[in-house]
Length: 271
DNA sequence: ACCCCTTTGAAGTTA
DNA sequence: TAACTTCAAAGGGGT
Image 1 (cartoon, chains in turn brown, purple, cyan):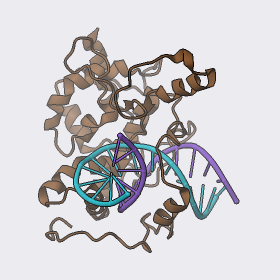
Image 2 (image 1 turned 180 degrees about the vertical axis):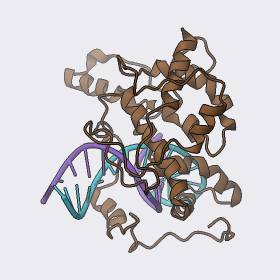
Image 3 (image 1 turned 90 degrees about the horizontal axis):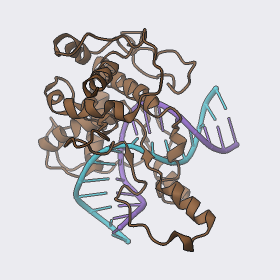
């Protein structure tokens, strides 16, 4: 039973129907939450990463889920075993490890007694911390307890986009290449590197992100990005606009008018 | 302790 | 429908 679950989850991950339109630029992609939407344009066929996996990995025969009826939404527990089994070996894969190590895919919520039976990292308490000990709820009004109940609902995080996946994979490398530790500076470098990537290289991450969104949709069918709106404490809108939309985003989606924070001296290879 | 910074992209909201 | 806003990750810095 456990093995079956692991295999079916693995097959699901390995054999999502690839998108059509190979060779074009991967963006923009239509929203996947739109059920009527077509597969994204420009996303290549299964990336070399997955070809490598399907050809060399000693797994059961592939199952084409496009031909297979899915009778219920994929459950987190369906994939928990997958994570615990694969998280080690997948680290040796070429190109990237993010697909298999990304929190949204590290679905380890529930193999009882298994050392890897950790909560799904995409589902976190709203505060991101351990919950406090309960106290006397009878002292609260109904509205208060309802609000608290709502607040205690675990937060399902957004799936990572292509750039986030790229950052996750490359951050350690950039940090190793320079002495910087500050994430803001690292992210500036990663942003430049992202633009320096070829379309094919970027396409790999767009494809991963697309799969991630698909998996997220199956795991959490009713979830909407709106669910997390307002959960972060943010500074006042006025101040925020000042810093982010003081200038319009350019074609690259950045804010050219804004004075870029100086990046300390770095070797040319880093930038 | 907790928000800000900084990046891009997806998705939600507003006009 | 275009423009705008929010949130995903990360971790040092600032309050």
